Length: 252
Image 1 (cartoon, rainbow, N blue to C red):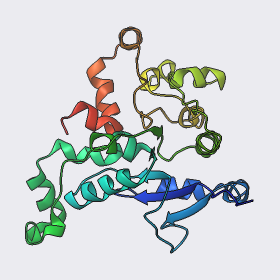
Image 2 (cartoon, one colour):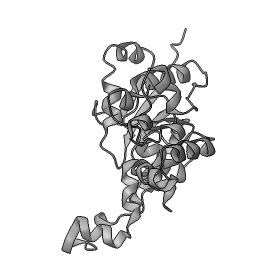
Image 3 (cartoon, rainbow, N blue to C red):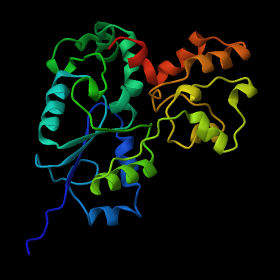
């Protein structure tokens, strides 16, 4: 009997720190089982092999150059399934902060007197990958959650639709037994941010900065009431959300 060919996985990176791919590599205990079920044909952080023959493409990073647009479209053409890997590819991430400025300002700040001398210095307003190609699934976070990566990958291999959280971080905060940061005189965008991180930032003493993006239908009215109760305004909190949400609060 002819052996069934294993699904072929590829990992790609654009403008990013590649921290989400490192999160994948940190699945040391689980990777042997995954590798028995798939064949990885592209993964710059892990192997030298490269191939244009793949079934599932995990794409990390936002798009900031014309060359990246061309490469991303090529990936979509070859892949049966495209997964946005992490905040940069899902929402534009921290890289969207540059969209607050004109591209001429950005180039002068980064390249100085060399700005405009070479095509490799060209830069575009930052975009999430779904502003350029259709995306099938999203792994949110900065970086992604190992647990979510394993769940999504297993689901895809089984032909099942992965269960991606679509409720606020506040739900996980309460499950973790955390005191609401608003009660501590701090601000937070957890009430309108997609869960799935197990409220790790708040649990360890920080606030939610919204790295996982908005839930599909955020209860903005309820959040506004919370802000009002604590003497805050929507505008003041949205300035904090723009750390990761600049692509949504500024035109890309």
